[in-house]
Length: 302
Image (cartoon, rainbow, N blue to C red; front, side, top):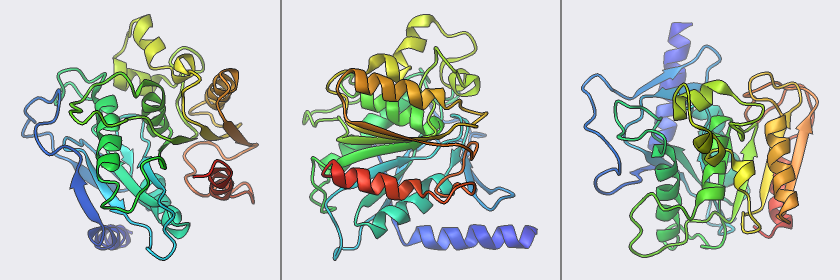
């Protein structure tokens, strides 16, 4: 079994090596402390064959450019989940990027910093900084990658969905240097079994890792995306399973209702079963949510 896991990791690394990997900050990382010597990024192959990354201190993209003959000019930033304690980097990241490439969409898999007092002056806003910097960099380099600046979305799974939803509603609350005044608003969002609310149906692990054990009410409100939706929030697609016991499906329902209330285009697909963390494939259903997302993107002209 150990040999199989090692081969799986080697196979992934060979594949990943073919992709461009770039840091999202060219200089100092905002709000960063000197990284302790024992804070070392670690990648592991889990028992189910998927990759988990922990202790990220230097955020970066793995770039999956769409084949030129089918490229649509659309791009998506993919944010894996992991409860803000790790990143499910393959089945909620690189595997998804390859599906996007197959429909002509360029994908940027984001290895974002996980909130930590060891490497951040204020861990609460570290993920939002990385989200804003990610879209800043993609939009700034749109021409290089053949991307249309009005077709850049963000997608997140689980806590990565919380990460993405925070940018969707707080793109104007500037946490990074933006001398060119580049628009940091995503053109669309896709949230897959996302953590949304820190006030209702809360996933306490995600909230604790981001805000600490006893966060004040104003921070819980700020980081509940459904409470910060406006009519300018970008259109958003959501997927969840009703039997999700890790992140209650009410999180997606709350976001969907808030978007509808403000007249924002939204679509929500709820599986009856599937639990949490199923990635691209919900084994309990014949419905392929990625195809539903692709159809929705066409309808929204992305």
